[in-house]
Length: 391
View 1: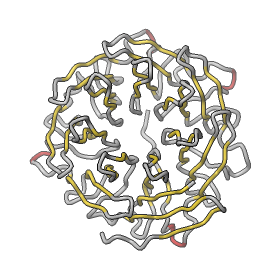
View 2: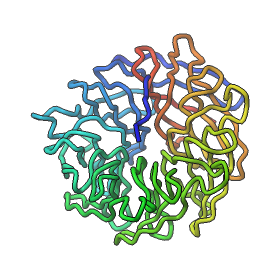
View 3: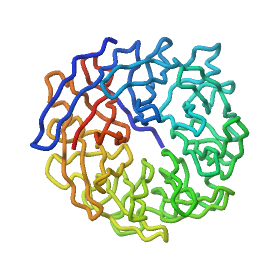
View 4: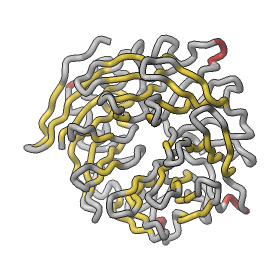
């Protein structure tokens, strides 16, 4: 399975656009290469109120970085990857870092490390980075997803390939770096348990971890699964179980648990129009398709659900589509838990796409109520942006 192609310092002056009477969009920062390039991941808000993220390219070595940005747009590079010989500190990150209970940030790099297959790292708020684990292939390789900080104090994650069958793995790692492989995908006949997990896990209120695989399952089109912290694995749903794949195909994003207890996620293909779906699945495994993407001619509602959903304090779910919209460069949308979708913003609404284009990371809601995110392209320098939107 090929990865999707994503193409896309001085703080730029803030660019604002009013899309309707209740939605204000602001470009907070335009990346320029030296301070990062192509931020494919979203952001996380830390306990100090600032936002943290990663870029895939850029930084002092052009191998990506970890950065901090304030809600007013002041950006600081914490660490540039490949700063050590042979990139033993890792290179290229698709993943959002997560803050541990110790105040440090934990994340993954897609490549680099002592074996070249990616890393798990810890970085302090001041920028001191420690490599906790270098993947060697047998224990996983090329982690695209970030980590989840579980209630037991450990971190859990996935790798895209590697493991016993080279189709990806689920792992546990302690804050000090003790590593355990919990599951290798394609352990069942015809990969009925799934293969190639692309997205992060979540821990639900029942204590189990839930996630998706991009491929595999009973029909080869991806799965929803759960795994206990001890490693007991269950496939919840195999996509394309309905005629015409109306339930969706290829869930590239992870899940979010809403306040009603159900899980919500997306697929990049399938549905009534073949362009993907937004779905709800209960903890007992009952799946409902809430929305089929590209339901209008030329996809003004957007297309390609590359990033996961976020539930806002108003109870609605918020997300991005990487392309489509009024200018073909992606959208920000809101969808109710019953399936009513509203497009809030279409990227490339500014001359030269100064507001950004092709968003790839999930949104995060700040304690101030605004939503924050990134675009993988566009901005003043064409290297991506950090933005906020007040819904």
